Length: 250
Image (tube, rainbow, N blue to C red; front, side, top):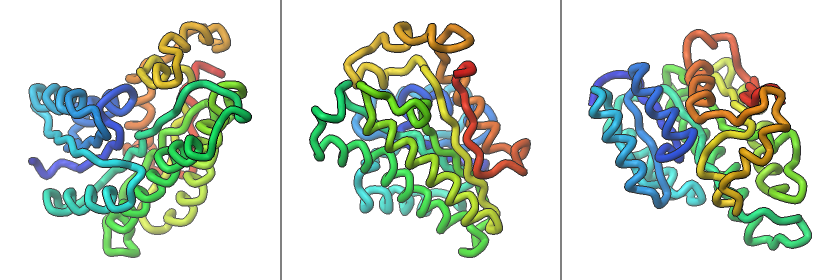
């Protein structure tokens, strides 16, 4: 691996995560992406990056497990000198339904992946990036969702609530570490063409709802990735605690 800046992208094997991994590699990052079960997809992204002359690896990690996250960061410590950027992208949702049909187990699954996992990853990143801990700074981007604003009634109020919590966490952590060389921001994607919608039981959901978007179309993962890489870059050096809508005006 090279001495280029290291970026960790959780859930980097598909969708927005994969697009972010490809773009980060093209911009000179060494990329580490995580996956839960999709090893073939993650390996394909790594292969594409290395074939293009970049540096990448994929590591399995369960964002619901504190011990797995600690082990993930220990593996990075063993291979690389420092972590420059973290993208908390891994997330999950479940079948569309109303709150009065949900059980606590579902809610716990959603929140453990979508907010506790990112908080733990950010904790480990801060321990390595912060000047308070002898680090040299860095940047974190959390991937939220337009659901945090709309609430996703009748579909995913639990998912929406977890993303709302992620946005609150983004603002709080940004202010907590602002003097320690770390910037923390979030992107809030709207209706994006990814495989996530199939998990909710409606693979073609974006086509159904795109007329609700002022631009009258769904977005592509690459459009979200470009925003993430901008927030990580020196061009956004005075930006922290921001939530950037990538939603076609919705």
